[in-house]
Image (cartoon, rainbow, N blue to C red):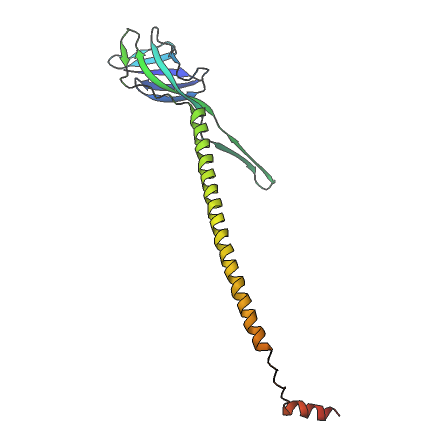
Length: 195
C-alpha cells in the first residue's frame, strides 16, 4: 500500500518503511505524529481524494532536523560589472514512514525501526575529535621539536669543540715567519715605464 501526501506545499509518494526529507516541520526529534493530508491511497484498490481521502492517515517519526547542503546563488549582468554571490542552506526534517492507513481501515506497517540522529550532538562530537587530533599532532610536533633541539644542542657543543681544536692548530702554524714576497718581472717593468 502506498499513499500520496501533501506537506510543506509539496506532494510525496510514500510507503511504510520509507525515509523522506520534507520542508522543516515544528516537531521535536523522535516525535511520532500523523499526517492527515492524504491525497491518494493506492495498492489493491485506489482511492482518490476530493481533495483529501477521509479516514486515511500516514504515521511518521521525526528522525532528523538539519540543514541541507549549501546552494550557491550567483547573479551576473554581462558588460555591466555586476556580480553577486550568496549562499543558502535549506532546513529540512527527515521522516520515517511508520505506517499507512487507508480509508477502509487497512493498515500497512513497517518492520524496520526508525534511526533517530541528533545532528547537534554529531556535529559537537566531530568538532571534539578534530580538536583532540589537532592537540595530539601539536604535542607530537612539540615533542619532536624538543628532541631536535636536544640533538642540535649536542651537535653544537661538538662543533664548538672541533672549532676550538682547529683554531689552536691554525695558531701553531701561523707562529712561523711568513716567506718574503717575490717580485715579478712585470711589476718591475711597469714601474720603469711610469717614470
